[in-house]
Length: 188
Image (tube, rainbow, N blue to C red; front, side, top):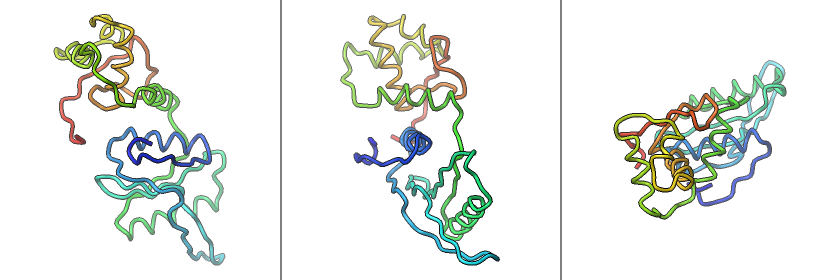
């Protein structure tokens, strides 16, 4: 993970996708796997639950559980409710991830391939950004408007990962995707 500069274990694809989304969000400072074990009581007696991740962000702490929707049980829902109560009392936020929008995950994986630092070969960053100065453009149009269209595609994905450009994450990514310039960058 680029933010923490460490490898983070994921016990499932759902967890791996969460870590990718946390890194992309831009607010992340630190993430910890299985940070605490909660013990609580119900009418049936004592129970324990270990949430999957603690994400420390610039805007607060998130305790996060990850469970595929098909594996939700009554016990799981009680665990989630107890965890939500603990986070509320601690002044944190809570999220339970039970699935991902299919396009969002594929788009993030596409951009993540270009997340590493790039040298600005042939001022490609400037060329890409200048194509959207007047307004949004199609991904293919941005590439074709530069001196090296094939290289511009990689730089455009890099700028999307680093949130200097944006798209709608709920649709497939391709040549017909509309790309927007991000004017404000509160994370920088």
